[in-house]
Length: 310
Image (cartoon, rainbow, N blue to C red; front, side, top):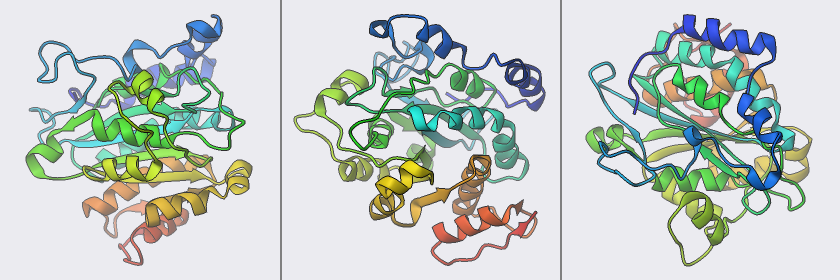
């Protein structure tokens, strides 16, 4: 829902300690200790978890981003990453960079009142847990949601994953004041190396809820998401991406909103700066890396925001 405020001090005391001690992603470790027939999403990131009685969507699995006295101009941001085998370092990098992401969004004023939903996707045809989605949060519960994600590390064999499943979920199972009150789209980022396949209708029923009469193609899922979200896909340009020609694949779907990143350290800065660009909040005082400037210029189709690299 988006209450509370991010604390760098809490992050340093809790998350940095987890990272230093190697105690991150405890739910993944616990889940791996069980038979695969028992693998499931943690309740805090289960996409089928329904809203409580105080919600206007009571009994439905809708993620809500709401304005509140602390955050009157909420900006919804959804970040889903591929958690299959080749992408195992991405969630760990995001966890390490959460302070950087919030620092850029809040301290450098990239957007007003960011509320972040963390999620993960895999292969809807193969994996036990191919979709996970937290709540929209403005405080350190973002880190808790990230830490509770199950890094199944599956996929493989069919030449694609299902980032389109994250598009479909966000299109059909979110509700935001940013759109309802201000007519402004939120920001949806999927991150991965492989191409996306068509979503089997059985997978939608099993992992998202509701019924569809037909399978849903990536183009159809993207069109649904684009109605209320600015959708981007960050391609981690590794061997798998090159082998599957993923940049070409996502560029065909998303045009300039396909963003290529080679260094995982650049993900958080890229997300924050692209949001700042679309919100019109970049100026000569914004300091980001040269690589991020190039990526923002590519998304901006040649429009040159005034940025200073560091």
